[in-house]
Length: 117
View 1 (cartoon, helix red, strand yellow):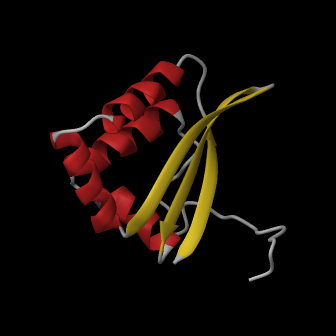
View 2 (cartoon, rainbow, N blue to C red):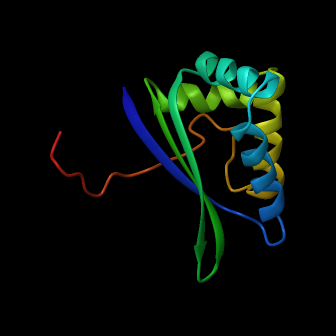
View 3 (cartoon, one colour):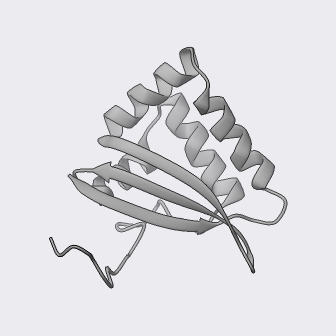
């Protein structure tokens, strides 16, 4: 299982939109069940999302545990699942730095790891 994290800048004035989806998913009921099913279908075993305040604005920090992060991102781009579409629309409107149409939506370089794998 790979650990995968990425950060997206949140556009000014969009932090309320980001927080609203977090609050909706933190509840229980149908949306929570649909969310869990969507993450399972994308191959995400664990997901954590933070809003980080920085001197230049806010950022969305996303952490996933998944077998193949790039496959998960392609699944996020192509899925017709309602919960996945809602998350994708949130990302595209509030933090559009992620280009889900490309072959490798995120290109990251690991600079340091401790302990060594």
